[in-house]
Image 1: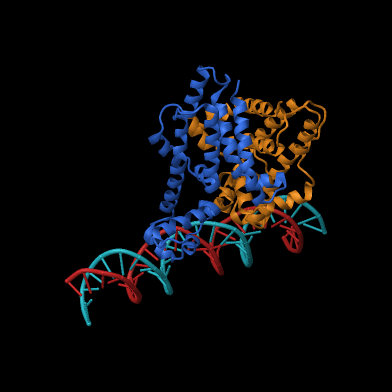
Image 2: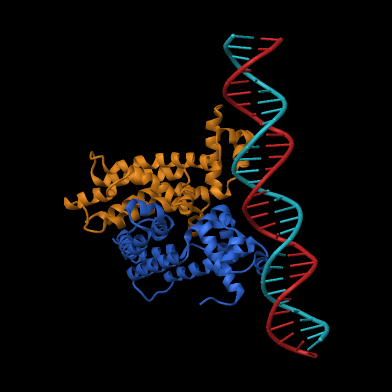
Length: 197
Length: 197
DNA sequence: ATGTGGCTTGACCATCTGGTCAAACTACAA
DNA sequence: TTGTAGTTTGACCAGATGGTCAAGCCACAT
């Protein structure tokens, strides 16, 4: 089922290696091996490790950014929206390692700012959405910033700190991954409880 | 105010550099510079980068492990216990970067298992505690494993993903760090809400 | 057959990095 | 003063790593 297009094969291989080893731990030779080509060919397609990394990073952002649109879509009540957001966000984190993103943002926070400054202006969309709900008396009168942090925390941390949580719960990784399905529903309930009056 | 004891100076320098750059990104030369000694001297005290890292790792675990004792101490009602746990855990994460721990556990999950197998047997203490509360009819009848994950998530993620959350909240890092005080109280409230009947 | 342009690669390079070592320095005992 | 044990370091090494390049390969047009 492998693509013959070398560029796509390289990008897939790079994602695998970068997510597993992080930018500093990743080796161009390993990416080349994974893609089944020579290191020289790899440099023929992507001039440097940095450029290749940028491509992976950007693809990741393109997966996440559409999710913030959830809060602009007015066709649903807020509870299903929360459930959908949690499900979608955890889905992205299941497919793509959040760790390498957090690592890289720690290494160079400017990388994120460059993208945010271009795309997002004004207050965060969830904050705006929550304040609208609050004005309408639909949710509890509390600081939406704390809700936002909690929202991202309960979705992101479980995959980020999987090895630690496997330890705490005495689960094998496969068992843990399966349990996260159940957890996602519980987490959404938890958030809804935090927001309800 | 610097210690003259070289070993302590080295450990402090190593913590600074490892937390900032991660194991793969950290350079022995940088640690030596930070400690104000030569690289050769650094190797005189700690034979290898691995050994030095192990010392930092172990010191970190020694800070965290005592916290699980919270759930064995029966002098309080459960609500204050939760508040105390959140405050203490976030305090540790404020002083010591959680990121390098998560990174390293991802690189080599066996490192954690070695410590857990020795120290912890049987079910997690929080799980046991929650089940006792549930039997006594004091808390909601829900899966304690999800509560455990949520508990650790809302404490750990805010510092782990600080750059991302600074972006979402349009805050400067200093402002964000300050806000985490307020957040800690809110997070404890949310947890209590999700445990209450 | 011959040329052409894109693709591939083994060999190579400069640099970096963890780690070693012999020589030098220091404090203190004999 | 001399010896000794612990400490410090500049110089050095071997291996790894990102990146380059000239030469070769291959499909296809002429």
